[in-house]
Image 1 (cartoon, rainbow, N blue to C red):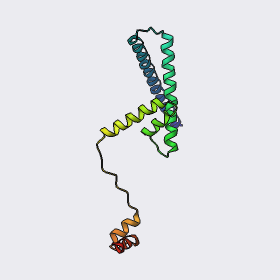
Image 2 (cartoon, rainbow, N blue to C red; image 1 turned 135 degrees about the horizontal axis):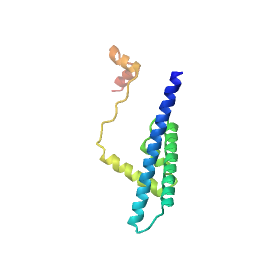
Image 3 (cartoon, rainbow, N blue to C red; image 1 turned 120 degrees about the horizontal axis):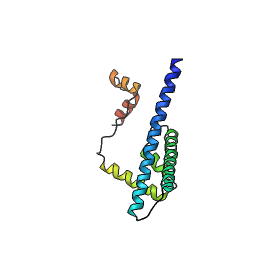
Image 4 (spheres, rainbow, N blue to C red; image 1 turned 45 degrees about the horizontal axis):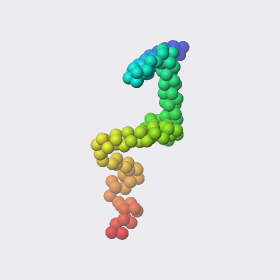
Length: 143
């Protein structure tokens, strides 16, 4: 029975963290909306800012679900930049901006050496046994 209580406490902690993050997200969205309105010399009512915050949160939650689905479909456990670009496929302008941003990041990234291909156990045995395998022998013949 104690194991069940532990899971329940964990779930309550997760819910509380989720609530805190949602509240912070809403406050940030409201702050952004108010600052943009002020910058553009427009007044914005409190119900409208709340609505904008809720829409932004709902959009973000839906986006997270889509990104997770794209990564799973590709057989990965984590989301990558291509998933993010794919999620913007309905908005050509946003897709172009994301691709440009991605290319800029790649240019700034230091060029690393290509990852070495892992050798199979058969290849390891063939190279350590001293006997060349068939593929090696045929390559040596061609030389």
